[in-house]
Amino acid sequence: MATGSRCTTSCRAASGAGSARSRTRPRPRRAASPAPGTRSCAPPRRAREPVMNYGVVLPIWQLTVAEAESLATRAEELGLDGVFVPDHILAKPATTQHYGGHWPDPFSLLAFLAGRTRRIHLGASVIVLPYRNALVAAKAAATVDQASGGRFIFGVGVGWDEAEFVDLRLPFHERGKLSDDYIRAIKAAFAADVPEYKGQYVSYSGATFSPRPVQQPHPPIWVGGAPGAVSSPAVRRCAELGDAWHPLALSLDDIETGYKTLRGLAAKAGRASAVGLAPRNLLDLTDAPRGPGRAAFQGSTGEVASDIRRVRSLGAAWMTFDLPRAGVPAMMKAMERLAREVKVAAA
Image (cartoon, rainbow, N blue to C red; front, side, top):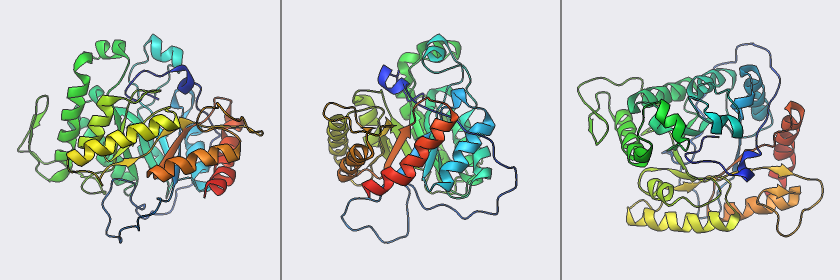
């Protein structure tokens, strides 16, 4: 769950697994409906609460590829809207302690899942931008978007494990400025067959960049931040460069406060209507209500549905959930309850 900042105890208690499905080749797919942040020719929605989309984050540090496939295909069967994967290249001790040491490449895994699914959005939560050359990341993202028929969601963050930056020979204390430059460079690469860009860390010209993404001008860019607190740099980055704010493990009050700040900054940047909200939190469903003092999205079906209605009233079009680490059967059951109980109660 490399989100662009170090995880807290509350958000570490997340994730899950599944069993492999048959290998029959899926039928050709149509492009998915646009995710928040994309352009569409459809008539604008009336000024009402948005339709809520539901996604789950796969704990790839504890999954085989077959298990990730099983979870993704089951999520699609259940009518969920998105499957997301996190990112690390090296698992230094802090990462291994909090999560594990097994980290498949997220772009490769998402491209594989694109061939095993037809409708569900496939996203990163999040790609640590400094870890890859901007053009390498752009090429990988465009390829996933092509493979999926326009279903990719490009979640991005700046990273948190300084030891990983050291081994990758990357400037940890410049990761924010570097990420800003990379987002601009990636957008420019997606904008033309022969793009040009000149920035602080990235410059290029005079070469063809292809394939470009199906989604134009680019897949939706969700900006993550530090867990458990409103990250001012992430809010500013999203206001200037992102399509949706993707905060991790925030309280409902912090989500509301942070999004209000974000909208103010976006308005100053002339982007007031361009930035959406897509929180990520741990989903912990209980049979009995937990009552006052519970953490957001933890409690009975009715309590979690109430939390979802609140963030939807703020303008959120997505909720993405980490699922409790309780083994494959429990992960499947949690997804089923989300699809069959929570979605219905929150509608």
